[in-house]
Amino acid sequence: MRFEREISGAIAIPVVLAILWFAPPWAFGLLAAAVGVATLHEFFRLAEASGIPVPKRLGLGLGAAALVLAVFPPVRVTPVAAAEAAFAVAALFATAALAAAVPLERALAACAAPLFGFATIVLPVSAMVWLDRVTVPGAGSRFGPRAILFLFVTIWGCDSFAYYSGRKFGRHKLAPRVSPKKTIEGSVGGLVGSILVAAVAAAIFLREFSPLEAALWGGAASTAGQIGDLVESLVKRGAGAKDSGRFLPGHGGFYDRVDSLLFALPVLCAAVLIRMGR
Image 1 (spheres, rainbow, N blue to C red):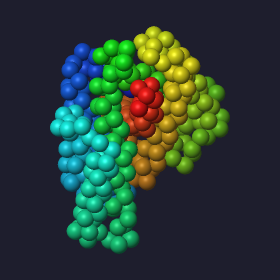
Image 2 (spheres, rainbow, N blue to C red; image 1 turned 120 degrees about the vertical axis):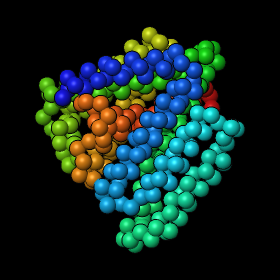
Image 3 (cartoon, rainbow, N blue to C red; image 1 turned 135 degrees about the horizontal axis):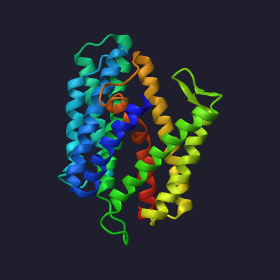
C-alpha cells in the first residue's frame, strides 16, 4: 500500500507543481477548484453515510460557484461582503433543510454539516487560489507559487517524518478512537520534521521569511495539518468508511489527500498577511 502511494504521488505531484509554476494563475486556480469540488462531493457522501440529510446538489453548486468566483473574481471582495455571502450560504442550507422536511432530530445536523464542509473545504481552497496570486513588495511576482510550494513540502515533510518515526518509535496511541495507527511519537516526529523542512525550504526558495520564522510557521501549519487529518478520520469513522473515495491507488479519495493541507492553509495565509503588514 505504501509503495502504491509513493508511485501514485510520484506521478501526480510533478503535474501539480508544473501547473503551479509554469501555467498562468487561472489554470492552477481551476485545478484547485476542481479538487475542491471533488473533495466537497466526498464530504457530502460521508455526511449521507452518517445519516445526515444534506442538500448535495445545492451544496456542490454553491461550492463550485464560490470557487470559480475565487478564480475569476468580478470585484474585490470586502470583509463585509464576505460575511454577507457566508450568511446567505447558511440561510440557503437552512432553507433547504426546511423545504426537505428533514426529521426534526436531524435538523441541526442537516443545517450544520454543509456549513462545516464549506468552512473546512471551500474557504481554504479559495484561500490557496488567493495565495497563488499574492505579491509581496520586493519578493517578485512568483511569491505566491513559492509560498504554496513551501506549504506543500512542509506538509509532505511532516507526513513522511510522522510515518517513519511512528513505525520505528511509535508506542503510545495518539487518537485510537479515530485513527488507531497514529502514535504520539509519530506526531512529534512529524512536527520536528516539518520544522526542519520549513527552515531549509525558507533558506532555499522563500527567503522573505527567516529560517526561524519559517520553522515556527511550519510547525504551526503542520500541527494544524495533523489536526485536519484527525478530523477527516473522525468524519470517516462516523460514516463507517475507510477512505473518502477512490482516486489513486494507495491514496484513497481527494479528501484523504488534502485534509492536512486544508487545515494548514489558513496558518500560512496568516503568515503571509503578517508579512505583508495587513
